[in-house]
Image (cartoon, rainbow, N blue to C red):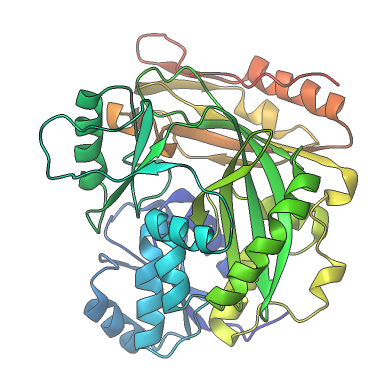
Length: 424
């Protein structure tokens, strides 16, 4: 699908992952304008123009849209900004993939649980507590996880194993919530996966499923993903047990176009939905969809923002969530706190033929602070690999871990953990 070049697109958000959207928009010939309060935001590096402004300042964003005569607006990879994206588009009569109902239920973890229950989709067991109670909170079976209802990337999440930790976790969650709301859930010790949907003209297409693997070396901090394996070992079960219920829920939410990720815990008896992401994902499954299926969610959403159309061709003929029986693995490189002094092995890893993308988020001289530990801000890089079989994937992952090293100013290795994949 082609759009008229030199159209102006405003992109909301400033992180590295949003910067990749800016790069794609530039390649498409769009004039890119980034709005984000941080003057040094990575997404501004290659943009045609930018404004140092908080996108929650709706009236000022309106002024920029009018001043620039912008043709469209798109939210970047940032959960908290999705409601402001929808509000901004509505205020300025621009194309938007979200509506008020979908925003209500897909950008709040507590509201999401409510609508899942309405459609017979299990969710992580949760607790309701009086957060104004500064004393001991009763009737909670530990351990639990405390989360802001509206934050993403693992920010503000705490694992709590006793009442004092829970009180501290509540304060942390509220401090990281725009709405000052939180959810307290059972700490699930079972398998983890996510599914990724594409919506085209009112039809929901299941586009990818992957198993997520987390490190157990974070200590008191929240676990963070260190790898994702495509396709999920639970694909057949999910398609049979959960997909039909979700399809009905999507119809009720009147989702016409867009992309959506949902994470699930899985045990032998059930799937437990726990985290929706109604936008492009930092985890970037769209890279594999581009590689295996030859469509790009970034291009599709940019096209939609300008023209109101996601895809011109027969999407079903492209969409294959089994990736033609090929395999893909994303490796997450997590860092311990410290200052990066040396980075070794990146170029030789990038030269491998089965590596399709290397997203690096830090450089020499950058600091990983204690506040970054336990969420996705401690991710040095995500490395995207593809393979014909599982054994080739195992060998490539070993090569990556044998060659990559990030050293702090005291000569210590900063990489937290290495993903160990089993040979088949």
